[in-house]
Length: 309
Image 1 (cartoon, rainbow, N blue to C red):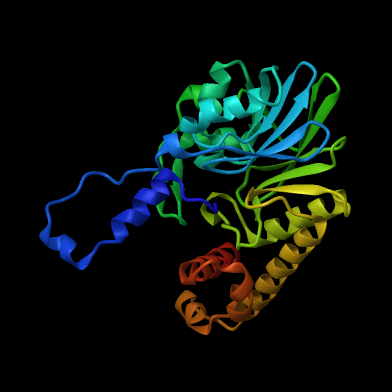
Image 2: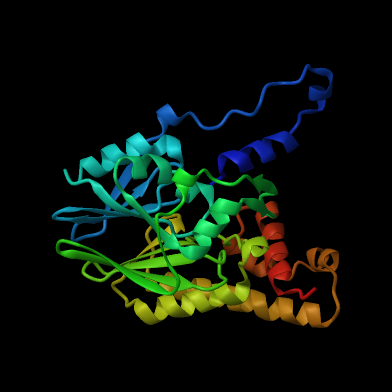
């Protein structure tokens, strides 16, 4: 995930300690963002379809005559601000809330929006991941089981179409990509595609290899996107600005290059530390890595998703 979740922020903060800190009394727990200062930015995508940015993954909003379809819900403290932003677009309630995957900066709205009456919809593996909890490698965090009220009420396995008066949203599963429960959403009458965190504009993706993600699945997802999109399609990424089909193609090419290079290194018997030292993606880093840690993280997730036990 491109933006830092609260748990990830806590993990990162615990690692950044000033030299003098050892002589200071322990501080309190790390503080998350000041939710009161976060503003929601709305981008009009045409034909009553919008992208909302706040704190967490991007949100897609599809306005119909009798309700709203919402894709991803950010963190729970964003509920009232997202609700207000949607109310400025339509007086109709949110009828469906789609989870593109199980990560908490996308599913935090499940409880408050379901209490408002929305039906939470996701791939069956999202419900399973939320119910069981687990761990992630990047960031290195343990995720406790979600309460029952946070679990999707409606699940699917391959494809599903949500319908409201005059609008539809087509949901499709992409297997083993960012996670094992990814959904992308296509709104045909607006020519808008919402990808979740398989795609992050201008930056390397995180591949949650501990929970079913793989670079092979990522490339397969982009094949599906490119087959569905055309040059006028507006792409809502998991994080970042609205993108185009050409940017999807560029992203897929980067993934394919990374897989090809990693395949060669693994075949040569290189260890993970050998690969870090070799810096096989140095030329890619110039465009896709925000910093050295992002470069290292991407090497790790590609290697780990490909290395056989």
